[in-house]
Image (cartoon, rainbow, N blue to C red; front, side, top):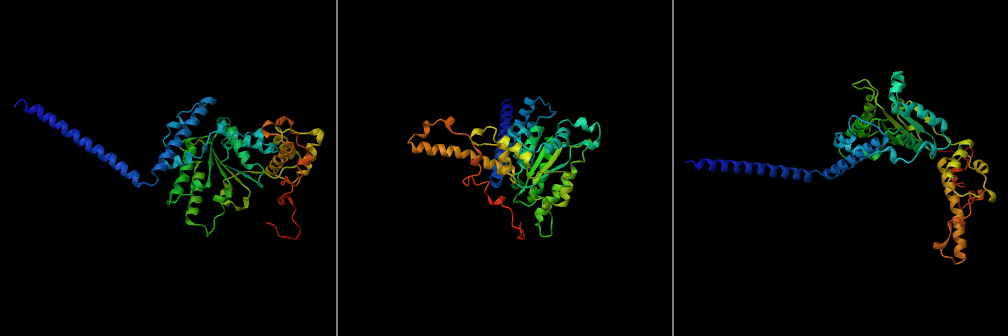
Length: 379
């Protein structure tokens, strides 16, 4: 009889182990089956890993900059939609554009510093003085193409040290009904967790254009969701204004919905540069370029001849002009039968003014700069 007790105990333990092993096996089998049936499983796992890596990088940037946070960004719990948006986050140190790289927009830069950067970086200085001095909830940069709107946005993110969410329109486009709305909600919830944050939407007119009865239901819902959360930024539990700014850029301001424009109180017109601005832009573009003043290079003459051009056009003109001395040098060496691997880059002549006005350059002779004939319709 005494031996039956240990046998029963051994049998009981064995039964427990068998049941536990069966349940554990069932758990992993069900988990595997669910992964097989979920077409987005691999994508979600990849988003989780990449978003975690991005958040760790932001924490490292805080340590390098001496910034202390109550909760590390890598310890934040993100839902799958926030993880998708986190893929759009760019660390400030990864943006290699500063205000010094932008020419001719000093007035706009100073106002951006006073109204956006300082309230984001030193909020106590403004909030303790007046609740009216918090950062605006929306900033709009508008003007002709190629005048530096996107470059201004990059420099703003770099100088402010804020988390830069470079939102692509395709990120909000999902095939499942309602997922786009959840992504919009995740955009603002993630921005709040990572604040100070800048949500940048390039070509904002494409996603938040004027509403009409012809709009698709999904598009209308996304716009409504966006505006609801945008206004909801001001409603916080601790009554402290969130350090989040929505920054938009467009060259078609007339296409943006009026309700969206109301949420973009700070608007900056980035227009074509005048003579003084063109001189500053050309000086920045050509600062690392070998010039030939004795051979006919003059900045003032170049400034006059580039009237009506945008900063992007001038950069392309300078790029084409800088190529002409190299092209001539290569032709000369080939004609003499010399190997190009043995040439000396220091022997290439500097850029002259006439290099900018050759038809081969193309940019200064582009049809985009031909004045329209009076009486003919223009777009």
